[in-house]
Image (tube, rainbow, N blue to C red; front, side, top):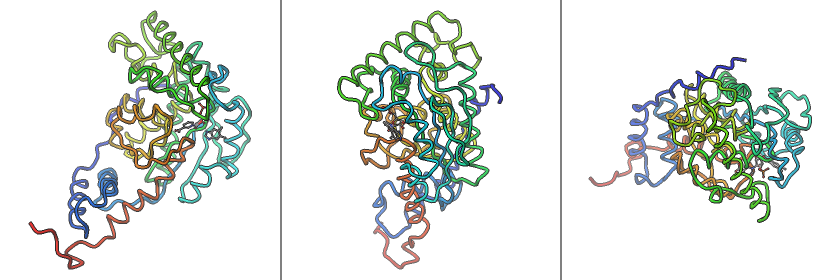
Length: 377
Ligand SMILES: O=C(O)c1ccc[n+]([C@@H]2O[C@H](COP(=O)([O-])O)[C@@H](O)[C@H]2O)c1
Ligand SMILES: Cc1cc2nc[nH]c2cc1C
C-alpha cells in the first residue's frame, strides 16, 4: 500500500452549476407553490448539481462500515466492553445488525472493513480484512497511531470509494463500529473547533453522569498531553511523515487536521475521513451519518474544503457535541429522530427521503403540462 499522503491535496471535483440552475428552474415549473416541498426541493437541486443532470436519480447506494478498536477503551470511557466491536462486525455480516436490516430495506450494497479489533473477527464474504493493528493506541497516553498507520487507514477509505464507484454507486455512506470511538471523535472535534471538552462530551453508548465526567477529564488531559508533545517537535505528524502543516503556522499544533487525526483519532475515523476526501475528489455524493462520521467529515472538510459541496448530512445525532461540528462544517441534518447508533444507520434511514425528492422532481407535472394556472405575476 502506498503510504504517500499527497493524494489528499487534490481538489474536490467541481459541481455542475448549469445542472443546478436547470433543476432550480424545473422546481419553479412544477405544480406546487415554489418552496412548498421545503428541503425536498433543496435535495433534488443539490443532487442535480452533483450528478450533473437536471433530473437526478438515486439507484445504487453503497454502504462501507469501517470497524476498529481503540486503546482508550481501557480507560473506561464506554458503557460496553471492547469485544463488542468484533462481535457486532460478525452480527453485521450475518444480517442481524440495524445496518444490515436497513441496507436490505433500501437495496444498498454493504461491505464491512475490519481495520483492527482486539477480539477476532470471523472470515466472511462481506468482511474485508484490512487489519492495521489490534486497535489504535490509547490516545490518553500518546499518539493513537503512527503516521504509517494513518496513511494506511486513509488509503483504505479511498479504496472503499473506488470499489463503490466500480460497483456503480451513485451515493456513498460511511458507517462505523468501534467501542470507545465517541472519545476520539469528541477529542478531534475539540481540537479542530477549539471548543472546551465540557461543551461536546456526551454519553456515547450510555455512560452515566460520573462516566461522562471521567470521559471529560480524560479528554482534557489527552489534549494537554498532545499539545505539550507537539510543542517539542519540529514537525507535527508522529514519525514526521510529510503532509501536515507545521503547528506554529496554525497557533494550536492540534489544529492541523492530519496531526489531530493521528494523535486523537482511530483507524475507522481516519478511513472515513479518507473516504470522504476521495468521494469529493472523484465526484461521488456522500451521505454523512452521525457523531463519529461527522467528526471524520470535519477532518475531511479541513483537508479538502470543497468536500463539503459533495456532502449531505442525514441526521442530527443525539450525542450532544454533534451540533457544534455540524454548524462548523456548514451542514444541515435532514432528519432528527434521536438516533445515536452509528453503523451508518441514520444515513441509511435518510435514503428513502433522497429517493422521494428525486421522484418528485422528475415525475411531478409542470403547470404547463397539467394545465394548472401558475402564480399571477
Ligand atoms: O453515530 C452516532 O451518533 C453515535 C453516537 C454514540 C455512539 N455511537 C456508536 O457507539 C459506539 C461508540 O460509543 P462509545 O460509548 O463506546 O464511545 C460506536 O460503535 C458508535 O458506532 C454512535
Ligand atoms: C450493541 C452495540 C451496537 C452498536 N452499533 C454501533 N455501535 C454499537 C455499540 C453497541 C454496544
